[in-house]
Image (spheres, rainbow, N blue to C red):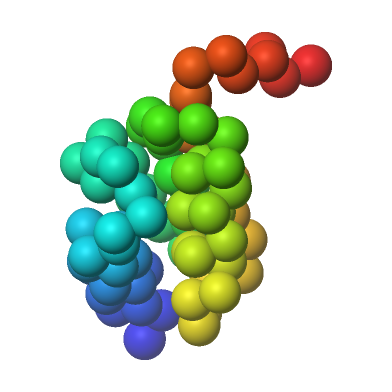
Length: 79
């Protein structure tokens, strides 16, 4: 049933981020699932880390889209 998918996916994504040696502060990255869309608010070290986190989540089976809301130093405001 779809109701089970989102919490399980959220748990798996959280574990993947926490295990990643490429993310400087995994606790600063939030994972919120909205159906098959994953929203990632929080803080990243830089643009590369934000992009890497986004790509890791996009490659996860069951994820249809990612809304990357990670903030990082020197970031340009969204238009």
